[in-house]
Length: 477
Image (cartoon, rainbow, N blue to C red):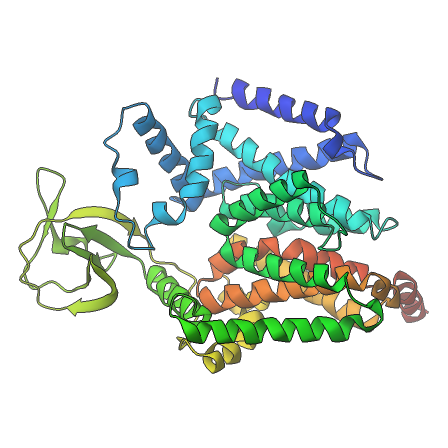
């Protein structure tokens, strides 16, 4: 059953690729498309085994286990602790990731707790998104099929991370479908059905990856507004609208703390830095506390699976009715009883990040370094495992493409300036937001995979093949 069920679903998905009109892709045969999907399945299995036996417990494992707990509760076989955790503390894993857990929960009805079935479903989710992107790009670059296949389907980190049970898989699926349905924001009119589809996809994207939602919505809105204007001054109008949006966001940030984007970014960064340090998190009716991950000896186990704290211990404390203020407790005399909520293992690839202030100048002055970090991390001298080595090689490949694209720029790309600008800005905005809020190299590598298909593809499309060939021939002579 462990092998037969995933094999059955694999055959079913291949059948759907053969029969569904959505998978009728110009210039790609169904056999080629099936080959690309099988490649994703292979990478899905690689992701599973790598993180099951070398890096456990990974997020994908926790998403799956969380769905099992929710499913057991649904069947009346669970105490319900997963859904009963304190939701006021935003860093609780299950509160941050409920949508992914619920997606896995619904798959549980037909997977019978077979994790490989879940992997297969996430493979088809991301494959749908990539296929939608292919069709969206092909409309503007019909003679660049090989580049589109290479840039969209075959970027190693995209293949790897979007073939596992991760948020990025769902985000890529939503992202690809939104770009395809909206035609990079250039669609002239919307049907009721299309509006419903886009609303659902944007809602999913909002709850999965809000920074991708923000970047995508902004750029699609600008593109759509520009379809109503004189195309002769496209870059001028685009710049004016983009700057106007920044000004509007700045003004809104001054009106209320809830609307203060700078505060949100600074808080997100502070929480990410705290999570990177890891810890053991406990709570009772009054307090939420965090111990150092290696400080388990400061807890005294009780027969009822609860814990008390050894006298003289040190930890961080929050009152449940005021989670914003942190108290540093030293030499504790607390005799209260706590339950362990969850544990976070310290990250082993943290880079030095200067803490931002929630101000315009602090955030925007940090953006250049944030983009550079996401683009170049991991560096050659900071590599700590094989996955980071492959990521570094991919970064070098991307850097080489950028240099070649600049030196041998194909001016024909300006004919499709709307797609060109969208891809470049979408990648840059994502890199900036990831770099501002993420101090962990491993997380950066995974988070940026939703930007890489756009960046790799547009860089290759910008290269004038004839100029490059002539240069190489002259170099040989």
